[in-house]
Image 1 (tube, helix red, strand yellow):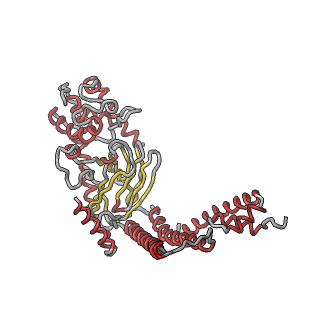
Image 2: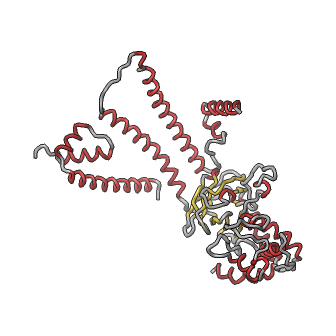
Image 3: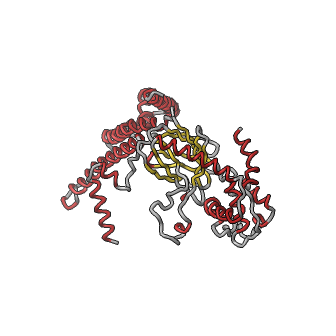
Length: 381
Length: 67
């Protein structure tokens, strides 16, 4: 333990003597990122860091020298005076000059960061408790991005993977070398969308739209998190950006839309109870288990149990209504836009037949699809 | 009344307070012979000019950036 600490401190001291590039590899430092803006933010950070180092060396150097040179054992006598206007003016002017000198490059970077004009691609990002929704505005594509770290890893029943709590079921796929504008808002409370490698960190506020932009220079996977405390699962709604070439992006868009149509078509066929239960369990663990828990027992006083509850064992219409439209005044969200008809039917079927709830009846995807139709029409107007 | 600080002395004292450094000699003079209302009015005027100055600075910086 002690040896680890010494090694850490030693390597830390060693690294401060290395070049800026080496320092960047040390994960404690800010990332240089993969965009021109993140690079200029990083350079700014390092410039100001070295200014701070220089100030510290000068100030503490003079201080230690004075203490040592005028020590009592040498018979130093304190010089008694009350004020010295000239010295006071000098030590006030120097920080002003330093601050103004730092403000000039900082302002240039900020102006660049806030200039969201002339974007080729618009992505709307909506924060939800506790997931992100991505709308490709000009491409008629919308999906939710949920945490995909298995619950067993979170509760220490399984070994944690490399990207523990930083992996999602659907990545935000973006093309490289393209000016992309993000429009950020929220469905419930304030969230903040943060991807360090892009140097984008912007609050998502209900009722407001904030904007940010990026041009990603290198393909790759960049991970981030919600950066504004937003409730129980604030730490469980990561952001995963996957930057691909422009050609690959077009292919991905076409594939994603085809998959969406296949999903809609699948709602029309007849599903067996087993099929619905199987998919329902997956949907439940992804969308419902955060509050109602994997065993359906909920959290007393906060999130109601579904096991043996009046809703899951009662009238199917009321059950469908609360899942589709949520319950106002509670944390129960409206899932009609978050899940497909098949997923909704599957999860409702699952809730009515799992954990000892055994009604034996299936809710059909086609039935849910009919319920979704009129509201979807209104939402588009 | 000839001991009372003139306008330029009052202005210098107000600017010194903005800056945060004042000599003991000027402080004695201000507190012995000055009238508070002069400093308050000069202070309000200077604060207004400061805010206007910041606004102009921001406009100038933005115009440099082409916005």
